[in-house]
Image (cartoon, rainbow, N blue to C red; front, side, top):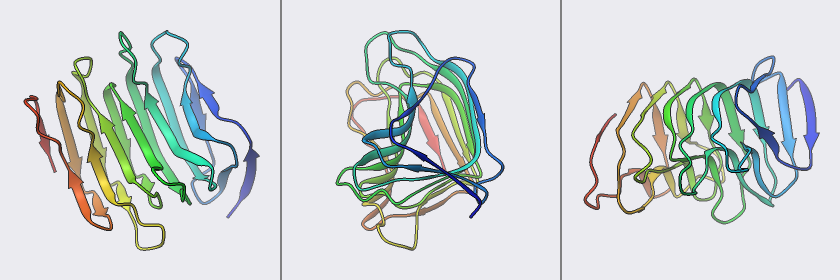
Length: 193
């Protein structure tokens, strides 16, 4: 591994943020705080046009998740996210997730690895605000080493469901009990894997 940057509190991104490391084997953020290592502003404004690339997020036993895109609050509709060459590891806290997606539209996640998490490699929540297109390309959910998540990829049971579309191309899934889980509760849209 290359340079290790120790962070004790969440890195907050806002509209137009671009965080680019030298590569996931060269730039490592060692997160020792609580909550998510990377998350949106959450001050009531919509966060758009965010690009994260080229680094590893190495978490601790107190961390809820590696990266959170969007937030679960009314009237919040963030869009246009790009994640490329990101790796999230060592999430051992009960309920932890590598990537948490709430109510976003138009996102592309490519060449990423969400490997070690207690609950899910990726958790997706889509309610009435989510109308967008989310595309995963060459991304790995779950992994061969401990901890392996219960779910490699999970859509949460949020009512009403409204997932516009979800594409997974060239992705790899491995969870302890379930690979991909979609909750059907009168929602609409489609998923293609």
